[in-house]
Image (cartoon, rainbow, N blue to C red; front, side, top):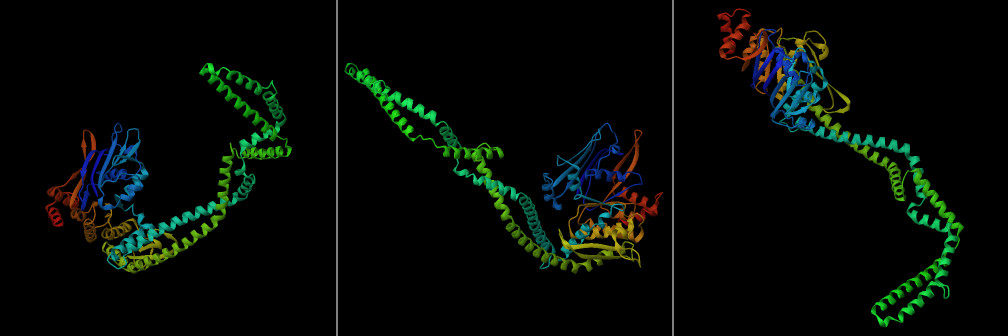
Length: 559
């Protein structure tokens, strides 16, 4: 419910702080006094676009802030979807800056207009003769029917609310499977287009036998085979230098080692030097032997050189073609291509599996949809009768109202059913859809009858009736007042009215008036006490000078 509203620098309102109660609040005042200004201010906090022309003093900002108690509205999911901090008492603020820029906040968190509108629709329902077109929308009509069916079946063995909850859970699963199926089909189409090319690339990489290739070893082998004459000559030269008789390094080292051995008895230092020379001699002998072995292994092999060259050419071409730096990256690419080719062949089976799941989902959804349809069909005569009775009491004795339900081929949030309300206010005329069937005043009264029924069946947001009683009087006005009062037992109702009967039904009465202050006209909202309320209703009854008879009539209405 709307608990409080603060308006600053908006239209004819300089500053207003208003506390609101639950039940039925009445707002009255002369035409042009500023009742529409209050609705305009509320419209801004509900997400309507801001207009700098509505700012009273363009040198300072305009502020509208509303405080709502939302505990009973079940809006936690909406707050989560919109990424807002949920508070059971929520503050919504809208500011229009002198520059014309507008900004909005929910619980001090900045929000955009889309977020504000999504929340606003769940907080206040403004209902006037010009704002009844939602009544003609199919989703709203289905919501009305389902709310009624849920209320009527809540104590039965098979409550509609439980069935609808099961259906919606199944629909979520079905849509998930449908999304997965669409993705797989798209993936299969893409993979199929790429299959031939990927297979060719994979075959090319697999034929290169990358797991058997050592690029560094191949390059080294190629260099060795390509330079075998130079290597052989060098090894022979080194081997000869080491092993040449008497002049070779080995013979020289042996002689030097023997000479050093002849003086080791004179000093331990000489012994250590002799040992070091012996170590060098052993290393040279080992080197000489290894050079000989290497020389014996070296043989020209033009065929092997050709093979190595070919392997390296293939490898280098692949590295260049795939813009990779080494064999490991080529292996990774090969494995990725293998996965794609394998997955292309495996997608068909996955698609068949999802198709089977979708068929099972449809069977389940169809069964639940038909169960919902049976419950709805069983309650349609009752809802038609209840709404028609209320509409006739509201001054349309010849009205006819019918709920038509047809089956669709699409699984919607409410099943396979499509609902349409048909209506006529006049005898002998054809029932038509609501966008063609009635005038604004007739639709407004039909909406009142529907909202009255809904207020009993589900928790509704605050509803504001904006002069829907235009052109109504007498017994019909009494009935309207009675309906609004009944509705206010389950929800907050605010009625802007010109009818004394409706004004007298309220628990709280506010009056809008204009007055001049410092050469400026301002609107103000006054909460009436018992005495001033009596005078206001007497004024509404008399339409001019308030007589004692008018006061007595007003007193009778209030009592």
